Image 1 (tube, rainbow, N blue to C red):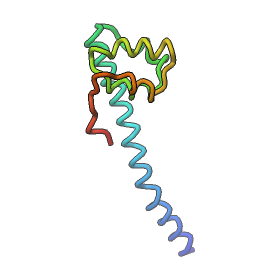
Image 2: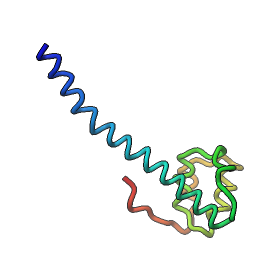
Image 3: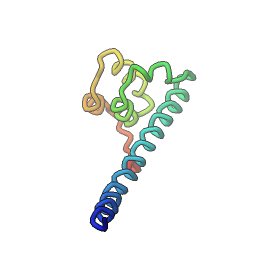
Image 4: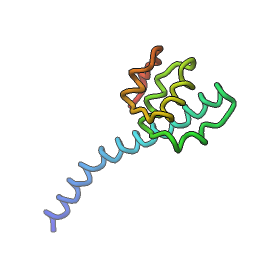
Length: 102
């Protein structure tokens, strides 16, 4: 009985940091989506929600590094050609660094 309780306690101690890390990353992904929705709205006056189903999260994350001047054309190109995150990042000419990512 004591061994079982110790095993469960050890398992909880191992899983807890993983769950907290997962929570932080999921929360950050939600924030990135909201940030991109706001940027798109500021640039176009339209909602990004219509285009979001056509974009994978990895693409949205890659697009956030683009400057405002190239963001809209990169979104269109990404949707049209289904560009991967690596290709999107390679096509960015004016990079906006994100130094606050978890």
